[in-house]
Image 1 (cartoon, rainbow, N blue to C red):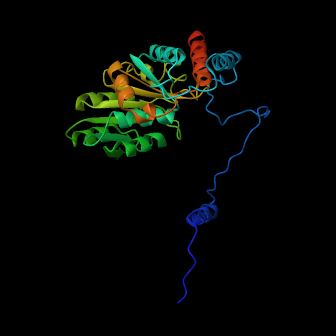
Image 2: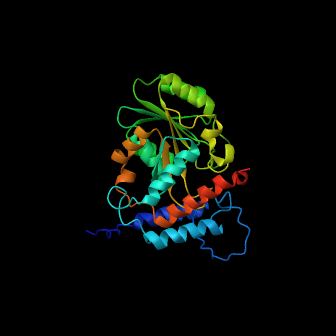
Image 3: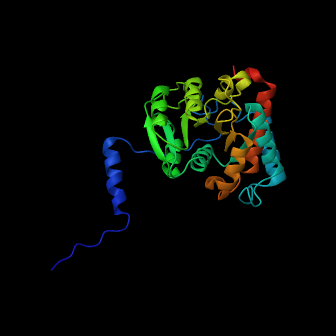
Length: 290
């Protein structure tokens, strides 16, 4: 009797790699140099602030003062006065009661969706939402209804079919097509169903609203009792990190329940300092948003 030799634990990866290659779907990293000499039309550096002398100086100053890392999770040693300053100024600039800074925009979406839903609740998610929202829905253990893109009536029908706690989630500006969500109509639908509205404003901050205050400010929804925004600090602010903005009781709830906040090392001081420097520059020079 003969036996086939056992396969190695990761042999299955080779089959997947072969199929990707045949389909022309292989991803590859292409490192760029600091002095590439190219006009960059592919980045998210919408306002050109990532290399602005004032922003890089703020990042360097923060690194010199606080060190290279935050040294721990935010609830242990990872919260500095710099983080608190950034949160206060973000909330004030965008028109919300409070803010919470996390290590990335991806982590911010996971935090908001998992902490504000859960078993027995419903998340209504736009079909065009970012992957971080999709993953937040999957991790939330909530029932998820994926509705057609930018369709408030479909959101209303999904909410009406659910008896219990619910929220709707959408990008403000969709990263693939660049179109904007119908935020006013969505907010009206959510109010009628007593549901929360969570908006990922990653591509709206620094671009939309007076002085770049974001899509929710532009729609007159910033600071609403049932409205939560998530942001990234890596696009218009040219740094790195993410944030959740909303009512103070929502932010306090995230501090106590959001796993991507509780168990993650705090945002590096240089990133927090750079984002704060960019935010202050944008506040001082609102014409940059135009």
